[in-house]
Length: 229
Image 1 (spheres, rainbow, N blue to C red):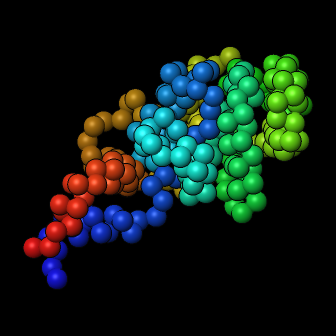
Image 2: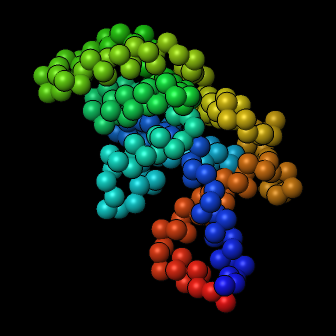
């Protein structure tokens, strides 16, 4: 049975590895509409497929299982620690999953946004206040959360100090690309020409993966293209 060219492409796409290379963990209330959004777009521009919970999970799916699946399938996690990160038990559960996955080679890259790593590691300051509440409501999980925070706080990562966020994000993207062995241009993204010839291969791979993810969400269109010639 012969298939049309589009179907052949779809079959190849279905055999591709994980849709995402990076899992982005963050407290939406703090950074969804500013820092994390800018970081996500910068990673996407450079062809680094990145999962974030507001567009990586389709309506109606089990959020917890999908997040766990995304962590299991990605190669690297960026954890954006902000002032209110520890207020969310969802964020802390994500962190625990990520740190468990690290034992089998998953790369963990902490980013400290407007919070000191020592406050994260020792659960003092705002983090201490939140954990005092967690001790009451989630007593059975607190020990695991504390262990994960202590471990991640002293790992190699990046801390936003008094510099510009745009430069900070550029530095993060470069670090992530290096860890994933992506080949990025030396010029900053904002100065890159639009010529496709100057884009790295990883850029097009990222677009292809994103297109596949969006396409397969439309099941009727997918079945149409699977019809034989």
